[in-house]
Image 1: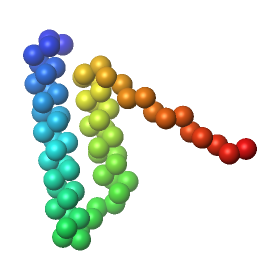
Image 2: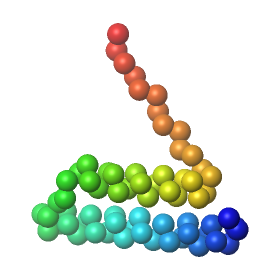
Image 3: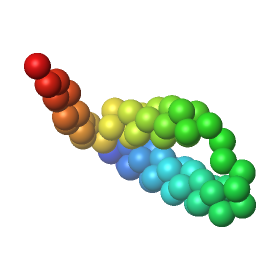
Image 4: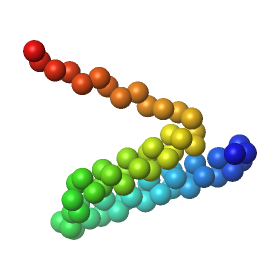
Length: 67
């Protein structure tokens, strides 16, 4: 994929993520919250797509278990 196309897609994804944050804030203020798991799934899907396009992978913290 060309660099300019990748940058264009990345820009669109950033815009969509910001719009979702704004919608979440409005819904929270109005008391009309969707299920938290639904919001997390959408956000995680967009984040994974953004990471694929940019090549930047976030490191996930290792789970800590008490023995």
